[in-house]
Length: 351
Ligand SMILES: Nc1ncnc2c1ncn2[C@@H]1O[C@H](COP(=O)(O)OP(=O)(O)OP(=O)(O)O)[C@@H](O)[C@H]1O
Ligand SMILES: [Mg+2]
Image 1 (cartoon, helix red, strand yellow):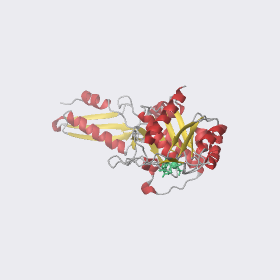
Image 2 (image 1 turned 45 degrees about the vertical axis):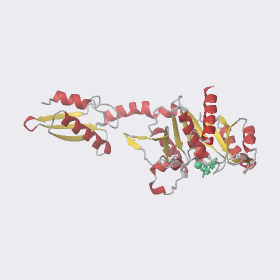
Image 3 (image 1 turned 180 degrees about the vertical axis):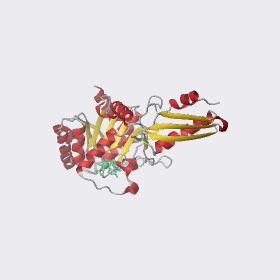
Image 4 (image 1 turned 90 degrees about the vertical axis):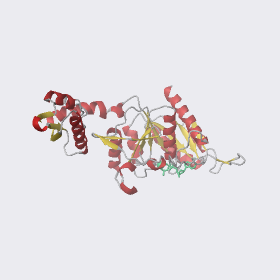
């Protein structure tokens, strides 16, 4: 037969879904009643927010546990935890969790920037993130292109993030934890936002997402030197940068502006990636420099840094079973170049 002590023991170790403390620690079991003749148990519990999906989840858990323990029927009533308890535990939770990522010196932030659009920032971001994960690193990727998000589609992500307590869990794909505005928009509808909101969104990506342990957090920036790029600079003073350019000399000239901004805000530039460097004929192996030559070198020289790698024009091999239209496989020519770039970057950062 179930006793009150036994029930308290079973329910006491359950975690409150918002504060992540046990019901015991929160003193959240208000009442337990047992009707022996009907083998009915009723309990009154307190949680941080009633009428939520989290409540429903906890409810199911409680019913199952009590029935497993022998109760025939179970009744539950929920009320909200008193403000004093909330305040105490919320601030404790905030201290250990919220500041975690931004103040953590274990995480290296790397922004992928360019002077103009369409040079391959997003392609480089997703593939560099995947390459770092292939090297066994713990990697996160923020699609900071809030209007023009493209990371979910490029990586073939069809899942949506799950909310746990007050935090959003990033979606994991190829070992990379990803967050994008695209996850929160219905039907691919366009977003019209004003400057200050962008900063808030970025802030949420840092503070309201449960990243866990991350060694490298990559940010796919929108093109140019606009609001978001500036926000990143002010929010993450220790952010490093990788600048993407095409080989055309004028592209490098424009990209230098993005680089100049990084230097002005004391962001260390890790190097330049030259994308769409050449086209290599499959038949003859001959290289054609369709977009010109020298842009990467010129940019690296201007910014006093090095060219981390050059990526030719090429598409990933598409795989219908595990579709990710922009991710190059590990044994693909470009997949190998991305691995080399990732290796170069990590060894530079460990120095
Ligand atoms: N090395 C490459 N070979 C072939 N196609 C490429 C290569 N790099 C990028 N692309 C293609 O070029 C297009 C633009 O790339 P991507 O979206 O990565 O650029 P972006 O700089 O992020 O653009 P935006 O400024 O719009 O954010 C995409 O269609 C992408 O698939
Ligand atoms: Mg992009």
